[in-house]
Length: 49
Image (cartoon, rainbow, N blue to C red; front, side, top):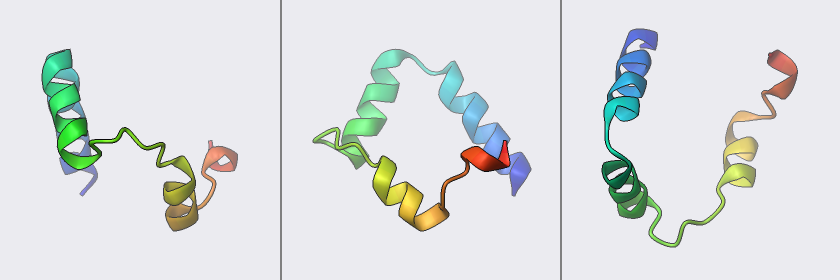
């Protein structure tokens, strides 16, 4: 599971900016800030660092 996440992160980092924008727009075309939604689902992770 962690290995899959690391592999996907490396794959995304290796991509061009255009490909990253394309991926974001395919999932979130209005570029909505999803911070609050993610925080509600997963909690505030800042204190875990």
